Image (cartoon, rainbow, N blue to C red; front, side, top):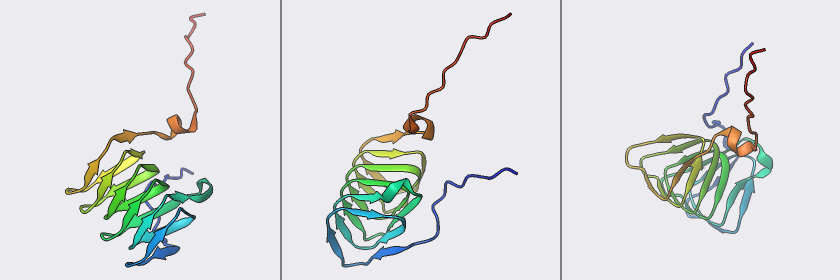
Length: 136
């Protein structure tokens, strides 16, 4: 009857960028992407579909990130836009503003930028109009 909305990342990884791999250019993906290498470009989830990006301890991204779920244990140099759930593990290093809905930050994680909370209502452009109740 009631469905609990899960805001945790999915456990499914569809693609892998291995250690020692360097990609120069923007990446668009669906599903789950794990990065153990380096990306010099933007990483964006395609089509607004649920997406999970996982950065291992040795991973590095120099560019903007737009995903729904993000787990970071590596380095990001650029702004982060995470629509649902963001987990910053102990070895996380983020240099740039971080926009998030739900945040889990482990001891040792470092952010050199602003943390900006954004709820789903504000991002979707929906506003709630309140009307004064009449007594009669």
